[in-house]
Length: 345
Image (cartoon, rainbow, N blue to C red; front, side, top):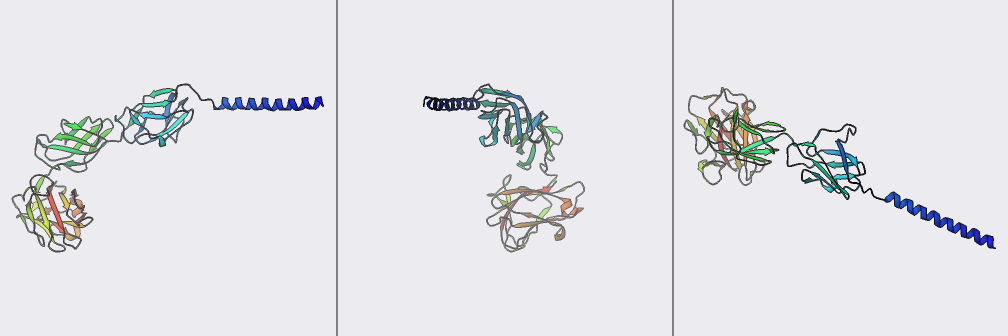
């Protein structure tokens, strides 16, 4: 009897001892690493063996190091990565770089864990600059112009053709300058530490046909529209715009050059701004040179806003001379349209 009790007691003691050992072991396994974080390098997701010298905005990267499991924040030069785009264990953090950062090149990475922070000096490059347009699209010397686009942070140079101009103000998507002397027409260049952008469209005109009025030597020969060449309410630039309420389908705003026809040698295309009135969304207007419909170019209207167009002569049949410019309503309806800044580049 005593032997049985002793055996039972020994079994119970052994079970308790085993449970205690297991509990201690589990606690040891769950014990957090309390060391401060260390960053040893950065790789991309495809090649995790070679450390990167730089990465790009909006790119996925892997931060390598030690003691990273308790990461709660990844900071890129003051821009915090979204929590949903950070995945960490002890040796790596997978994270997506924000779409925009304060500096065009130098954007250090700071990792914060429960037990400290670590900063890694790293080059994260914004995309090359992009120029999307100008406001206004033309103007005399001294005109203040907003260059519109993106990725202008760190701008180091702005040129009109080959003439450097001082920057009045700058932001990520807008640079303000003045038109320099002798440079009222041409391409604009913006340079940042990442690259140089050339404007797709030219600033200004080689030849103006209409700004605040029809230029001397041109006359109104429109049809099926009550044109007003001195409309003052809906204006793109200057004092007046050309208002055209079409009185019938397929009407046209047409301007005619007094003889002789204009020699197009040295010109590249036609520029104009157009504003769609009520009900004109997605409606069509066709630009014709010398009335030739087969080689015309159709544009799509946006209701309630100005849109700038620059149509190359190669898209208009490569004419060699110009006697008429026609903007024909091409949706077969009556509609209200405004025009401004018509000319050649």
